[in-house]
Image (cartoon, helix red, strand yellow):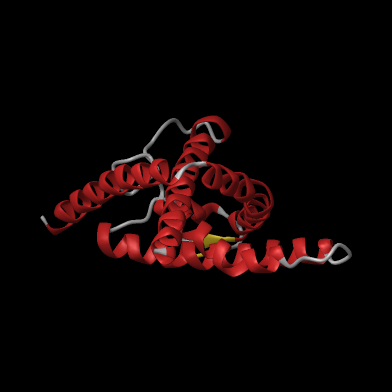
Length: 182
């Protein structure tokens, strides 16, 4: 039962960050770059699963380190988390670009070709730096808030929310698979 509860907790974090990532992407397109709205996800719903994957990787790689931090080593730890999350997120983005291209023929962020330091327009230095900054904010600010919300929610609520979200996500994913194979 403990393992199922942990899986449910991680799944809810995954989905929360997938939705958060979708909102971030839309905000960048509409407000920052003024390109106009486009659905930034590869699925129908308002989520970018790559952000959920990144969040889980950050939690699994860095959470235990943050829980054992010492006061004098705070700056070194922040720099380590910055570099580690930048590298991890860039590797995830590179892998996701190949996976998306394999299944859909393209990847959603083909705008990196104009960046000075890029690799095949799939990854670039500037977004990697943003990933590092985002990773620090995620682990030091957002994740503690999400953990408090999760802990304060009762088991009945988290079970119901996880079930509904999983069902919607599963249907969306099956829909994508059906459209790919046609």
